[in-house]
Amino acid sequence: MVLLEITPPPTPQSLMDAKLRTLINKVKKEHDDDAVDRAIYATTVYILAFFAILIMAKQYVGEPLQCWMPAEYTGAWEKYIENYCFVENTYFVNGTTNIPENRQMRKEYELRYYQWIPYILSLQAVLCFAPKLIFKVLYSFSDLRVTDLVQLAYRETKSKFSQNSKVSKMIAMRLVVKKNTKVVIAFNWYLTAIYFLMKLLLICVIVVQLVIMNYFVASADVVWGFTILWQLSQGLDWRSNGFFPRVTYCDLQTRDIGQIRQHTVQCVLMINMFAEKIFIFMWLWFFCFLVIAQLNLLFWLYRSLAMRSKVRMVVDALKLHNVHPNRATVENFIRSFLKYDGVVVLRLIDSNAGYVQMAEVLYQLWVNFYGLPTAAKTISMPLSSATRNDADPLLRKMPLEDDITKI
Image (cartoon, rainbow, N blue to C red; front, side, top):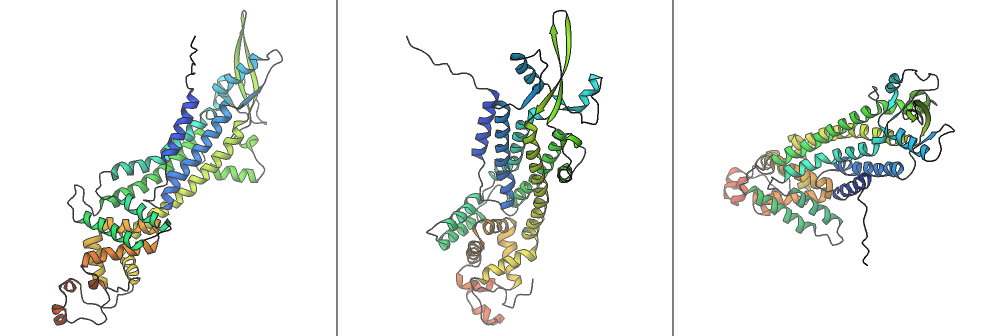
C-alpha cells in the first residue's frame, strides 16, 4: 500500500507572508540614485515588512485578544467568543464615560484597524517601492544605461583592485557613443525628467502614507504622532486619549432554547501595545522623510538645472587634472555636450562612487569633446588670434584662455 502525503492548502496568512518575503527579495538598494531615495524605497520597505510579519505572527500564532468571560462560558465557548470579538471589532469607552445603552451608539466607538494592521503595513511597503518601479519601467525606454554605468563606478570604488582610470574611460566612451547615436527618445532631458518624476512620486507616496495612517487611527489631528508623544511625556496614555487602547468591549448574542441572550464582555487587546509603538515610529519616520525628501528635491533641482552650479562642478573637477578653462568654454561644454542628462549622470556618480571617480569621468568626457588631451590642458599664456590660427586645429574650437570668474 502506498501512502500519499496530503499537503494542506496554504492559509491566507502564509500566502501573505510569502508575498512579503518575495517583495523583500526584489527590493534591492541599487546605486543609480541617492541615499534619500534608497532610504524611502528600500530601507522603509524592509522596516514595514518586518513589522508586518511581526504583527502577523502575534495575530495568528499568539493571542492578540483575550476576553473576560461570564462563569457559564468555558472552554470552546471562550475561544469562540475571543475569535468573534477579534473579527467583528471591539469598541473603547474611557474610564470616565459610561457604556452607552444604545448598541448602535456603541458602533461610533469601534476600533476598525487592529485586524488589518499587517495588511496596512504591507500596502505601505508596496506603495514605497512603487515610484522606483515606475522609474524602472520608464527608464527601460531610454538608450542610456545609467544604472549599469553608475553601479560600475560604485563597484569600482569598493573593489580591492581599483582601476579608476580605465573604468572612467569606459564610462565616458559609453556616454559618448550614446550621444553620437540617434535614439528614439532625446538624450538631453529624458533621464533627468524621469529621475525627478521618481523623486516627486516619493514625496507624494509619503503624503499618502500619512493620510492612510490618519484614516485607520481615526484621528482628525494631522500631527497626531507628535500629539501622542507629548501626551505620553505628560503621563497621559490610552486611557485618556483613546489611541491604541489596551482594554476594549465587545457585544455578542448567544442563542439558547427559546431565547436570545445579549452579552458585553471586556477584552484585553494586547496587539495594540505593539501597534502603538509601530505606528508612532512609522509616523515620525514618514514625517521626517517628508521634510528631507522635499529639501533633497530642491537640492537636486539646483545642482542639475542651475548653470552656476553646473559650471562650478566642471571647473572644480577639471582642476584636479590641471585644466583651467574659461567660463565660456565650460558653458559651451555643458550646453553642447553634457546637457541635462549628462549632468545628472555625473551627479549620480558623485553620490554613489565618490567625487574623484566623477571628476575622472568628467575629464574623459572633456577630452572626448575637445579631441586630444592636449586640447584640454592648461594654456600657460593667452593666445592671440594669429597664434591661435596657427595652432593645433583642435585648439581653435576653444575660446581664448582667461581667468575664470568667481561663480
